[in-house]
Length: 91
Image (cartoon, rainbow, N blue to C red; front, side, top):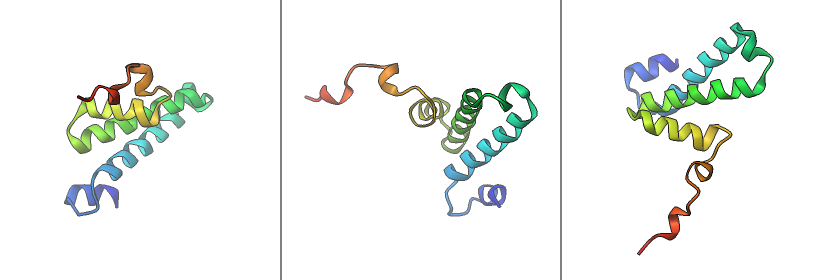
């Protein structure tokens, strides 16, 4: 159903199904390789990159997908990437 909904351009939104489809594929790939099967940290990295790829495909913005992955799914936050308080520099 996800591929048909995205392919038909239905009004269900394509962001969620693209991320979901990418994470499903990453889960299948993680079952094939023993490197990911026993290591939850490596599996989380694979899922994070799959979610980033889904967001990048849905919005057509590869950098946005990577930032989404770093902020929401990954273990690293944007504060660690850029530690300055961005919200306090308003004139």
